[in-house]
Image 1 (cartoon, rainbow, N blue to C red):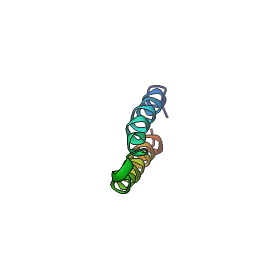
Image 2 (image 1 turned 60 degrees about the horizontal axis):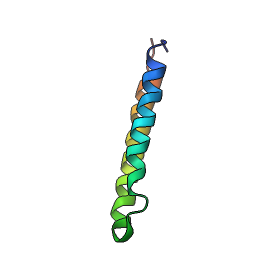
Image 3 (image 1 turned 180 degrees about the vertical axis):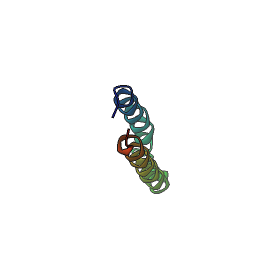
Image 4 (image 1 turned 90 degrees about the horizontal axis):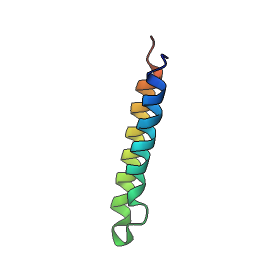
Length: 56
């Protein structure tokens, strides 16, 4: 992994993880929010696996 990719990956994790946490206290819409939260979490993991798993 080159030096430019690690800070970009850390910034992406921070940005997307804050976007994912918005639906945790959703009240009556908690079921839908939890499903969306799970999808966003899986998307973050997929993107990070792609970024961190690429060979130079």
